[in-house]
Amino acid sequence: MMNQRAQWKGAGMTVIGAVITLLFLFPVYWMVKTSITPITDLFSSPPHFGVLNATFTAYYDNFIHNTDMLRYIGNSFIIAIGTMIMSLLFATPAAYALARLDLKGKSMIMILLLAIQMLPGIMMAMPLFIMFSKVHLVNSYFGLILADMIHALPFAVLVLRPSFMALPKGLEEAAKIDGCNQFTAFTRIILPLVVPGMMTVAVFCFLFGWGDFIFGLTLTTEDSVRPLTLGLYRFIGQYGTEWNNLMAVATLAALPIIIIFIGLQRYVVGGITAGSMKD
Image 1 (spheres, one colour):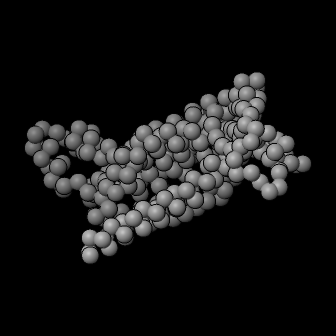
Image 2 (tube, one colour):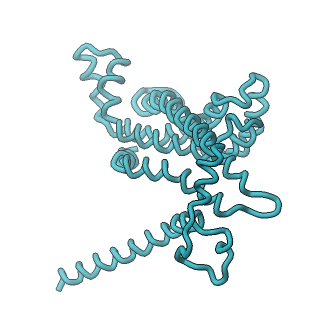
């Protein structure tokens, strides 16, 4: 009797999980459907949940006939990869120091990081524009990467710190007995053990750079360095929105995110759960 109840409970949870998954996937399906729906069928009433006359004209127009979107995609890759690398370079030693070293004022630093994390990007956009315009970082890849890194860095440190805290406390002492100093113990012993946490930070910092709109809008005036998010904004006009073109480009923009999460889901899940039993 108990086994039968457990089976029914498991089946019920599976059904609930499947329904929730379908609800979350429905906007993705509608985005792809809209991208291959003829413009004349987009506003049919009642709306069609299937595709009656599929067409790939929007993809051809935006990626083959006109290659402007490919330039935007390339800009987004440069910004996202740069944000990811720079965030890792600064967040990894900072998280290690806050987790493993006896520093004064660690509590105040953590509170400051949390406070900065809660600031919306729009509040930092104008001060960054004023500073960057004085040092000629407006309309540059480095300026956009630096702005996104500033926004992503507190999050990266807060996510990576528990991974260092979860490691045994005697690792550095054991490494020093074997002839390592503090730096070599960090690079040779500690870092390989927190790879899942670093992969998690890398994925989310990449997404910070890939999905940025505010800094791309405020720190650029030239299309040569603008990211894909501003390319999407081109389809939203005063007198209407080109929905099929917008959804076609959005579908291509979502592909790197989907591929990254599918390929690195093991590291992402492991990095998120690492250190969850210790703080």
